[in-house]
Length: 139
Length: 139
Length: 139
Length: 139
Image (cartoon, rainbow over all chains, first blue to last red; front, side, top):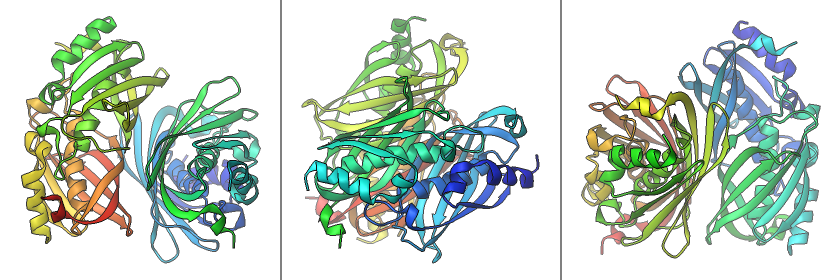
């Protein structure tokens, strides 16, 4: 798979991203960008963007980035810091960069910003890299 | 608000939890339990339970637990480790315990298990405690 | 190596633990306990126990715990929350428990308490498990 | 205190940093750099640079960075990923950048590199900002 096919793989197959209206904008080796507009279904009990929605946006970018070499990588640990609340109507962009890659481990840093360019969250993810090509998942 | 009212607060107002079919089973001071059955909308690109769905389940338990004293607490940092994949049909339970509470900071540990009792994820969350009573959020 | 030999391995060979006066009290499969008394050399700029000293205490317990099966496991990610300051003279105990173990990954939770039993820090560690026996390290 | 005085504050008062041979090279608002050469006392049981030593190097840079505005900030949560082993003789540099600052919370990202410029560790730290000026600590 090339990175265009990898992007399509996630766009078509990631059911939670579809359910939450998350768009995967671009994928290249060791990099990806995803976007989500905060709507009513993304709010938490106190009417701000739910940590779980912001996490899922960043997590899709993380998955696309850590799988961008064409082999399956699975998330094992993530740390997320919330820097600023997101409000209904905000357009959030998650930009993932692979900071380090060994044969077994990929480490990515994902920054989530709002439409004003303010940082909303910082997400540090570690994935375990398998040897299986991504297409092997599709039976 | 007593803990029963706090539970109802989250059940009625947390839009993302409703959207993902997450049930808040119980809340007491410094403790809470939530549950989610993995269905198609919770899957990721490789057909296992999405990290974002499991995170959101644990995050609802975390919110209920860190807000269980009746004042608003907002998540500032979370670290989650994924221990075992969750499959479609699995029934996941998140149990939150407040490990430590100071006037400003609440630290909770949330364990997510499947129907067999196997640990699926471990979630360590830190929330900043405001002085505002939870009911002040509802205008 | 049995767990007694593993304990001795760390006691003799972990130079930083020796340099900081950290004692490894016990090791069994999936569990370990270490201890450190806060002295002047463990203080930070504002005269409380340094985050790095408390981290190192917990990290030794983590290493002993994740290596307790006799094969080498190396730390890949750790999240630590500081719950309460430690003062000069405090006696800190780090208790490690392996929460989950797969062929490749060990996840441990380490709780650091002071002499009054108050929780000082919570440390969640993930290690990558190699196949090499621990004794292979010693040439 | 200006940033020069803040740098001197940590150089003179951080006992653990002195004990481990960590140098604070520079501090400016929202930024700092520290350095440590890996010697025998920094090694772990398997003869590589101890996670606790690398953490402490990054933690000093974090403390200087989050305190660089002249008021006390205390670490509440840190996540560290280890990307590559450090060996005896390696010269490690930790560069801290404040990613976000609110009246209550400072979030910093610290990258640790070796003499070849390879990334050794990624450290994401969150500190609670008090109102006390740093000089108030010195009685």
